[in-house]
Amino acid sequence: MDSCVHIYCGDGKGKTTAAVGLAVRAAGCGRKVLITRFLKTDHSGEVAALGLIPGITVTPCEKSFGFTFRMTEE
Image (cartoon, rainbow, N blue to C red; front, side, top):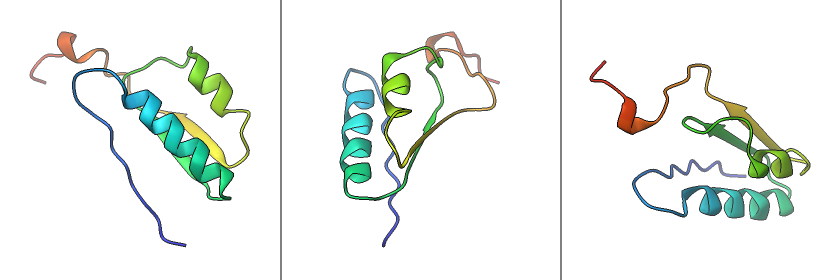
């Protein structure tokens, strides 16, 4: 099986929805899925739901970056 990397970024809505939809489809086809989250907290409905689906692993980023509009040049 080939591996794929999808990166969803940018302004506007739909990034999480697109990632969750693709993850569910891939897991439904027997593929293993890893989702790494960089900007959202662990307390969200999609993380709870994805944790119930075999084959999907959701990991938080080790470092908290905060919201991009609050970030400095560092």
